[in-house]
Length: 162
Image 1 (cartoon, rainbow, N blue to C red):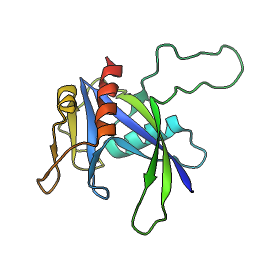
Image 2 (image 1 turned 90 degrees about the vertical axis):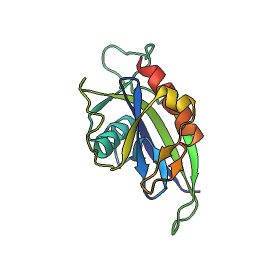
Image 3 (image 1 turned 135 degrees about the vertical axis):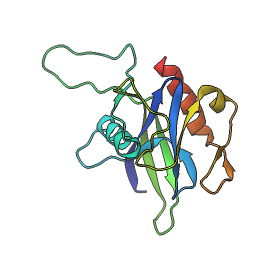
Image 4 (image 1 turned 180 degrees about the vertical axis):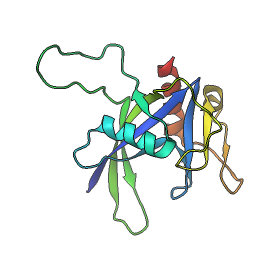
């Protein structure tokens, strides 16, 4: 089976995380997409966050991240989780995404929650909304729940930012 490496960035600020309406999939999702050739997953997550949200972000690193001194291999922060998702898309054969999921925060302390973003319709969701599985309005006005994996990871992203 063909597999594609992808990266996801949960952008967190002020106790909220950012979701955008993915028009092709008809879902609320965090920022993310395919890794480009010669791009590591951290670079991909940061690039996708910027392309889709317009925000420069840094990955929230675990406090116990191994640091090597002197010459040697670079140490990348690990993803919060790696998801393997079957992708069934019209006109494409069944394939999988190996998704490196990162929790990130904007590099700027100032974020305008109402500002438009390149990805289009979006919402900054609070932890309380995610805990209660609060549905969000799609562009046509119907209420759509955030997928369970995205909801639970959104909660963890907010918790990791505190």
